[in-house]
Image (cartoon, rainbow, N blue to C red; front, side, top):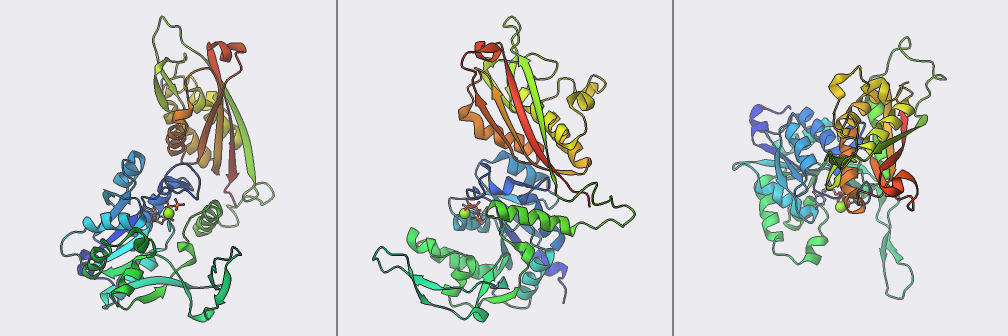
Length: 420
Ligand code: CTP
Ligand code: MG
């Protein structure tokens, strides 16, 4: 059985992407975290687009997050964007409120399961079309699972039982539902106390509480929930496995370009603060600092972004700023630091590398940076499509950095070869 246009017409997918990604620890919303140069949200939307099983796609994003709204707005799946809430279920409710009237089937999906294969979306939708009211993708459990209880004696919890492993399943998303029944379940849950609401860890549980039967379809290893850094590394290697392998003739000898051998690079940039007779805006780390006199130079003087570019070029072994953005490339004269960083990251990827991370520290008296550090990390990470972190220090009054005549930015970058 395949999905008809009519099935698709009355099906919607809500992708919840409003979480903060605390456990991943990038300091930016998890859905914005890059995986092979694309955000997790874009990967999730790619799978949904390929699955082609829903006419309406709703992306639930962190309130006021402009970078994610821009990525979603430019994605070919053309999702309706709504703002999420404090908890995952608040975010699901925001998504449900945006459903078109007459929606018969709704799939709820975590953006954190960014590599879920299109077949899983289709299997869930087909089960709903066949009449199921609730369907979840599941995988067998490999660990033995114990039930434990705390007897309050201050010792660690003790085991109270061992459910038979064959009867246990690990649950993934998308979870699919008969839309009117799920809406009713969420309406009932709206009046619950926070403790009662917190005990509900997925939407299928709400249906179980209504006495609805919940069916299962096979999940997929690739639909893992990206929660911590090792999960992101696993997802990254799964993505590489998906790429078509080159023929033996095209392949480089393995000893010349070993797989996943990291390379580091360094970049340094120094800029003087412009003469006070010529007011200039201060741009540093992709941010505008309105209270400061800007740095001199033909470009915007963003020493942090420039050092990051040089570190990337150095790591990939493809020259430096002068090689790529020199006077023979007039289109880059006056370009913003973030523009140069985006182009540098593109060139590094074109040369066959993925970017692990870039770290920059600048030494200078101004601008005052600590309050805007996370903002800088987010802006530069979005520009590079990889984690960029910026820190700042002073030189204890010594040298041009100490007098405020100029500043120095030092950057390191780590890249790894994707060639096989
Ligand atoms: N989510 C959401 N709104 C929230 C919390 C979570 O939309 N208030 C989404 C997340 O974006 C994610 C999914 O629910 O796609 C599963 O949540 P989780 O993996 O816990 O992601 P985060 O909450 O972002 O991560 P963390 O708990 O580490 O902060
Ligand atoms: Mg969470």
